[in-house]
Image (cartoon, rainbow, N blue to C red; front, side):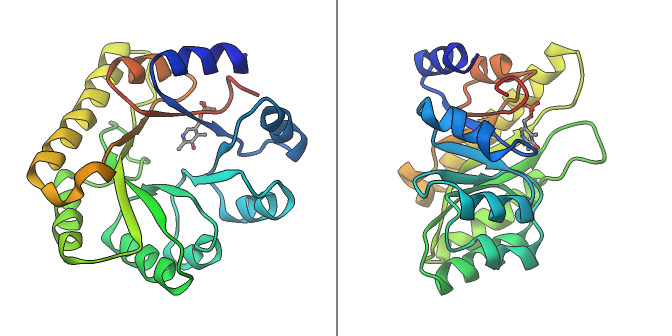
Length: 212
Ligand SMILES: *Cc1c(COP(=O)(O)O)cnc(C)c1O
């Protein structure tokens, strides 16, 4: 399955983050030996344990809701945080990244799903962060946007939601010129909807269950 998906994604120039939450170190190493280096986790404790045990050339992606007080523990090594869903979290990441002199890539998570449980920024909250950070020389690189579609069988709705995020991405790029070339990633699509995300122009997919 891994090589089929990998091939499909590379023909579309899309990067794969293998979502390894709840998977064992052995399962992760199986993909590692097939060349996979980007892995995503959604819990800090589990991430720390795996980071310590596994090869140091793995690029770890934090994809789940992150509490501000837990940023400190992952700041020294985290490669990308997909789930920046508040100004407060952004500020803490910036502070901790500076302290340990790590450069952290972040994606701003947009709320588009029709569910109360999904975290994410409104369009207005997104603009506040982008406005504030235009004057800050910082250790965080704002690399793009992330979003999750509603958990539904309605593929038209999913498509609509991904296109909303894509639009917001283009809009932000135009309005906030300072973002420049670094602002180039869209993290959308999981096992059930990654093909829709690819069609909508995503650059990163986060796939778990299909791979393991
Ligand atoms: C679990 C998870 C995924 C992967 O989901 P699958 O359906 O297993 O592919 C992607 N993104 C986030 C934020 C997740 O929590």
